[in-house]
Length: 135
Image 1 (cartoon, one colour):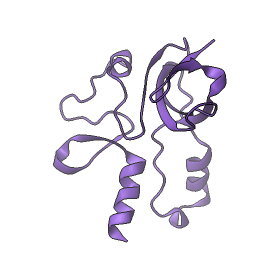
Image 2 (cartoon, rainbow, N blue to C red; image 1 turned 60 degrees about the horizontal axis):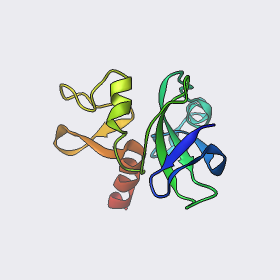
Image 3 (tube, rainbow, N blue to C red; image 1 turned 180 degrees about the vertical axis):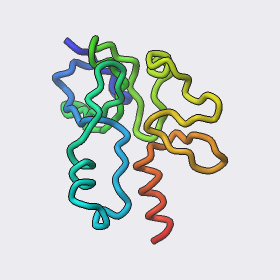
Image 4 (cartoon, rainbow, N blue to C red; image 1 turned 90 degrees about the vertical axis):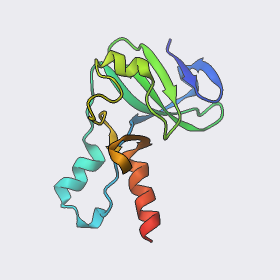
């Protein structure tokens, strides 16, 4: 049995949740400009990582909110859950052998925005915010 820590409701059984796939997938800003191959890659190609992985889950039988979960897919060890827009827990970065920020490098799945620092906002939300500002 897998116990998942909902950021709002606390620890619950896996049966209460729905899996939402890989976290931090950046939606293309202009999908109409993509080739069929590029669009298919966006829709269907995912990392399918064995080991530490960032996933999206929804607490279907509870608060019905989406959140991200850092989990090892080989052992089912849960490093922690975090709300959309927050950083993955430190235990995840320790497991992948990489600090959250080191030598100015951006962690995987994050985007450098103002000031050269990696922001806690996933790239997809940064892109959405940029579209709202330019509209």
